[in-house]
Image 1 (cartoon, helix red, strand yellow):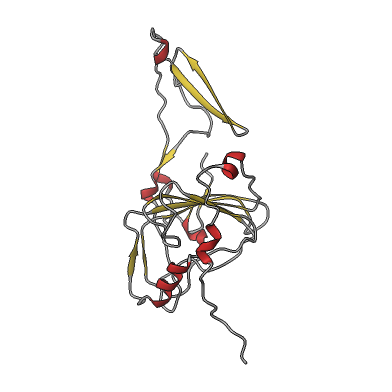
Image 2: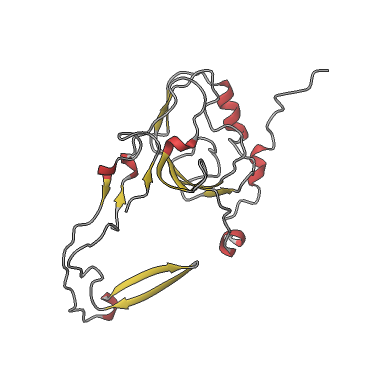
Length: 233
């Protein structure tokens, strides 16, 4: 069963037609002689990985029954929306799938992507503005350069901004965007980033906290931001 799609109509964002589910097909594969060629079934439970082997195909099914299907979706099929007037839009317009809570505006989980797209808004700071959220944001870079953090955030990198943690574009991005001519610009022909946004707090694993790849100077990307507003003397 596919969770709810993003907020824009029947033909925006992710389209139901692009979610692909397998067709039932009986596979009989039990003549495995070499133990190394046995089927391996990998499962994750409570942060641990479990693996077992079996001598027959796990897809030896006759039919799917009910409305729960494994499915896949090509993120390149996402129909991106954006502001064509002014202001940087809320990331909810990039929502692929959402699981809503009973409280309006507080999703249990939003799955969001930032694909290649045109920026045309005028009188607007185009990158994500500096903000704090009532949601927790876990985001990562899949390909290319993320437009709000051009250095030190290559493919495979990820970040977590918990509830009410201030964040925004790094100093160099802020400077470039503030001085840029506001003409139509195509962002990241080869870029793709994702974000999981939730009203719950996310707990870090020991691997994440103590890993050798942790950027312990992450906050310094904002250290040189100039003061833009001063009290009148």
